View (spheres, rainbow, N blue to C red):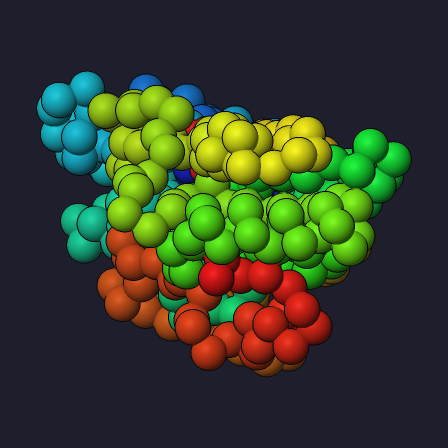
Length: 350
Ligand code: F6P
């Protein structure tokens, strides 16, 4: 059996742990030959790959990024305006691939689904720091991003207290507020602003004003996809060739400008950006990524293709990629962590 692996979309802590687990499981359990496709689906179109033996995946468990490289605009069906899916398939066939393990988020799963329909058997592994893929309670990488946010909040909190400032920390997460919610709770944010709950600038200003008097400072954790009522998303740039062309970023700075004239204390904003995606995965993500990689290898061995591994409670399961491709999972309004936030006095935008 000859199995390809690729990592698609943005990088994420834990990608290498998955590559390692898939490779070791397949080689050890069924003597499979494993090939890494370089830079996501780019590698299939541009015919770039390399063999992966156990020695090639040694010592990468804790390494951030992906040894295979990745790309966030590499849809073979829309390749610089052309459909190159036949070329991608042709390369997979010329390599003699029996299956392809695709590690990625919703855009990558959508491509994997369509490649699967063309006849290349695929298995998916859910990756994204955003934690916004449907059907799985967790994507690997999320825990690592949350740890970065929590540490950042711990750090700016001392400045907030020392100067009596309003400190705004902006997280990633695209259109979902998972990172800001979990990171904000872990870092003790006083206010958490999410895409799912459009906020009132007046209410945030009133909240911070009251804290000027009583507490002296305010820590705000805002998701990049959050928006004030009646306002649009704050878009940093547009990348036409990407499955999702919008790159968000800057809403923290926008909120700073709105709040400053209404408050006596100084307001500062910090954009965490790609620091949330880089570096070594947390222990939790290393274990989850390893379990996902092992489970993906099991699906390949059992010939159960067109499926993506998922986490349900403590158990690893799998679902059809068809059902999740191109869909996302926002924070539901009745999520227990939102209730815990409200009940412990965290301001959620109103
Ligand atoms: O989906 C992961 C993510 O990091 C989002 O949180 C963020 O909006 C986006 O990717 C950033 O993409 P890029 O690396 O292309 O700027």
